[in-house]
Length: 89
Image 1 (cartoon, rainbow, N blue to C red):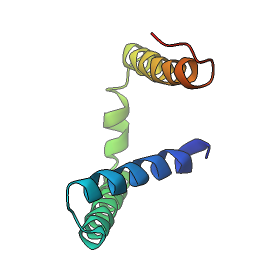
Image 2 (tube, rainbow, N blue to C red; image 1 turned 120 degrees about the vertical axis):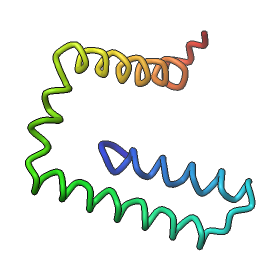
Image 3 (spheres, rainbow, N blue to C red; image 1 turned 135 degrees about the vertical axis):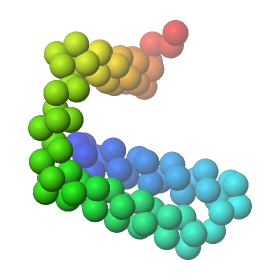
């Protein structure tokens, strides 16, 4: 599972496992996920229509993008070292 769809598979499977451990029914979880995805789609459409994306883009300066890349790199790298290279720390 690579790319964006792999990320969402991991998130949804984790939610299913944790919700069943907490006693939340799968119907309730599915409804919550559907509503959350619907609301995020509406917000994305509104941001696109209103032109708010150009204002939001100003918040992501090179420093912010650099920090995001370091955090993502650290997350991926630590997973690789623990799982694939079998290096624990």
